[in-house]
Amino acid sequence: MDNISIKVLNDLDPDITFELKKLEISNLGQSASINEWVIPVFIKYGKVIVAVKCEKKYLKKKEEIIAVNELLRKWGDPKTVFIHSFYVKESFRGKGIGSLLLEESIKILKKEKVKNIELTVDPQNMQAIRLYEKFNFKKADYIANLYGKGIHRDLMICKI
Image (cartoon, rainbow, N blue to C red):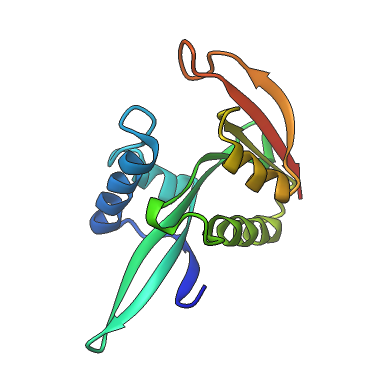
């Protein structure tokens, strides 16, 4: 995990918005991804936590976002957050980046007095489910057709 750091995005930067938009589409598909109109809203009013790979080349530091965790607070319960999107860039999967991002995200959320994390996951995505279970997420519900006809999800909740 050399040269990898976890950052909370706070600044609205068109270059980062463009990079996140590309990552969203490549990792979630066009229909599931958020766009350049929604990304700044997540940064300003939600929370976007990223894993960044840093490389130094010719005395310049180049940062590449390699994993993303986008969160929203639950309106009726501010001690609960919902993970809208959580993904690792394909070329970095299987290297512990998802575990690092989730572990550090939980630390950040604990400092902010968050008590519960909720998310939905495709019941067939066993790799993601195993990751979430590793961090004590428990299946709380199955929601048929949540994101449209035939798009079913498991609701998972973690108490932190």
